[in-house]
Image (cartoon, rainbow, N blue to C red; front, top):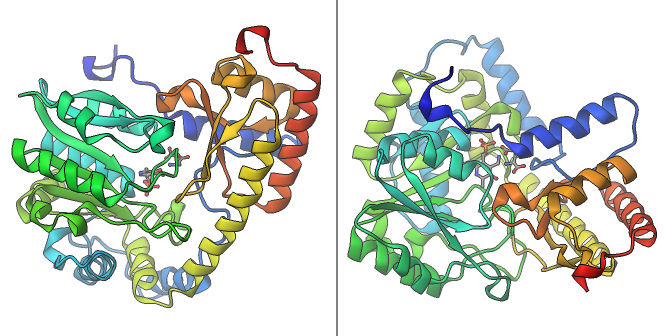
Amino acid sequence: MPADRLRGLEGSPTLALAAKAKALAAAGKSVADFTAGEPDFPTPEPIAEAGHRAIREGRTRYTPVAGIPELREAAAKSLNATHGTRYGGADVLITCGAKHALYNIFQALCQAGDEVILPAPYWVSFPALIRLSGATPRILETREEDRFQPDPDAVQALVSPATKAILLNSPSNPTGTVIEESRLRAIARIAREHRLMVVSDEIYEHLVYPPAQHRSIVTTAPELRDQTLIVTGVSKTYSMTGWRIGAVAGPKPWIDTMTTLQSHSTSNPTSISQYAALAALTGDQAPVARMCQEFQHRRDRMVQGLNHLPGFQCLVPDGAFYAWCGIRGLGQPADALAARWLEEALVAVVPGEGFGAPNYVRFSFATSLDAIDDGMRRLAAWVKTHKPQPAAR
Ligand code: PMP
Ligand code: GLU
């Protein structure tokens, strides 16, 4: 029997569905795959070359647990340039992907009896990462009318003596929501008053579509710096999902605690990947702008396509690369629809249940325009032959 704390733990549904779609494609099926939360671009050449160079030059040994000093410094500088913060290299821990940063954070912050306020819809791994620390997620429902932004009054209502932290994810996976400054300021005030930590997952910070602008909570409320852990990484911005490099910036005592934990788990993140990430952060940023522009075209094409389909309804996301589509009009829960679309139309999506929202489906637009057009055609054909069920009308 596995340990009690793993009881009920299920594998990541996003990863499982992406694997299923890939397996169907490998078996020769032509799948319109909207599952993957990863850019489809190759890692930009200068970054890949830095990885090759690290191997050639023998940079293949253990590095310091918290990462090579140059990368910690570069990550701090990159955050400072974006957010006007004043992190130094010692305030940053390099991790094996942003997911690992989050794992370290909750292991360091929380224990049994603690609560973490978690706005829904949430990324599928957040509740599991919180529970693995022994803590309990306290779900904060958001509303589509508010563009899925957390309501500060609702945050306040969930605060209890057990509350340890608030988890924010802006831009959000799965909704693409960028939280506006006035709300960040109000949430910061609550965190300040109750001495709560704020875990701010900003991994999509550079994938924001004008006129939207992303602000970090530490930019909006610099006084909260001592209570904030910012999660970031190179996976999404530089199309480096497989290199597994993330980072967390925050108060040095917490960085040191997490470094101690990391010294007994992964040791350093892969040396080769660290040198590639260093090239990503310090090199030409033009590829990021190009990828972001391309994502914006795809977003517009996908959202338009979805909103043309009867029973489908989605807002235009301000950031990340997901269209979060309401399917209440189709009269079936998302997981049933997703299973049918895969089976009957070879369209792969991630149903909303895992994100805490069964009336929605997530479509990733980190795929080609052709794939998007093809998927929309297939769904249009499917809808024609499957009239919405009467209950939905
Ligand atoms: N946070 C969010 C909100 C994400 O969508 C993801 C997706 N991968 C991660 C963290 C983890 O990123 P990484 O691949 O760097 O572990
Ligand atoms: N975060 C991405 C997604 O939501 C990648 C898969 C995962 O890590 O969950 O699809």
